[in-house]
Length: 408
Image (tube, rainbow, N blue to C red; front, side, top):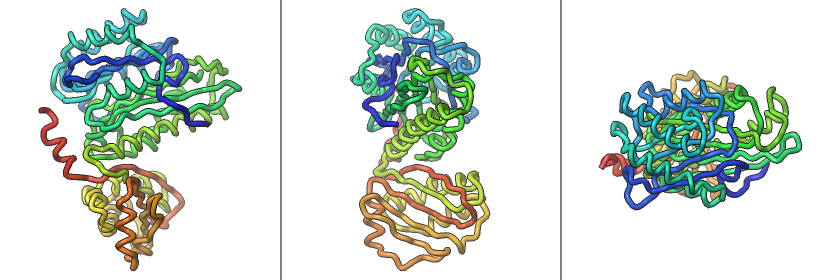
């Protein structure tokens, strides 16, 4: 498997377009479209929030009931959440407008929205933007990158990746793009993710691969502990690679799962490090747990702790906060067995705690490690062999500034 240039348009048959529709933002593109020239098997995972935005309900219905999907229309600025029957009607109108121009059914068109909750979409601008994008659809790398920028809200950078590997003697590509910066918490997050592949695979295995992988990727990131109304990851497979369709969990399926994980983990980490106001990516590895579930719970407890995140921002090796977060996680363990380390690629590793007791570590070196753009904390609770990794970011003054006036 190799990393290649671009994102979703690096995949055979996938095209994108974008436009400035003036939905909320002025002077920037705020709509994007993804289109496959061939019908796709589709899979999706969605927010666990009971309050689900209209696009989530629309897309979930397509994943569950439609024979195929072929396009996605995305807008940034207004979330189309808590908008009732009117908001659902706008999903239908958007899909119908795209479907008419693309020559596909409305129930083959996903819609996705991100932005302010509670406002109705300016449907005339949405439809106009949809109509403007269809003639400009392109499979170039530049078009894919432009689309990944169009879906941003408080993101500071676009997020895209593509990988290539071989299955059944055929070259297969998986590429994707996402947005996400705030209101991000495990069990999905304020993220929209769109992944395309040209592999031939059954719908059932496509859904299983995605559902299983989000547990170790998107569900392991947190910026602020808030789970959104709009979280959506869509995976579309058009089969244009020409491999024999994967209908069982064989070596070809394993190769696809590995590639999908590479794409999902990369996008998840990019969202975590681009958390609103963040200055660094904070990675937490918990090892030595009795079960995977315990390791997941412990790692999330650390990465979501406001006090730990603030210490990371201040480059303060306040290891007591990490042990405290482990202790209130709900997992039973022996605190007198815990070892704790921090590390960075630039300055190596240092042990802060040995068997539950602080070491005589160098504060100067610890501060240097914590000053890196990516910091990792490793907690070994010495109770078993299970491991889990979570990703987050530091908590800064700018996070409050961004969210204090988000609507205005």
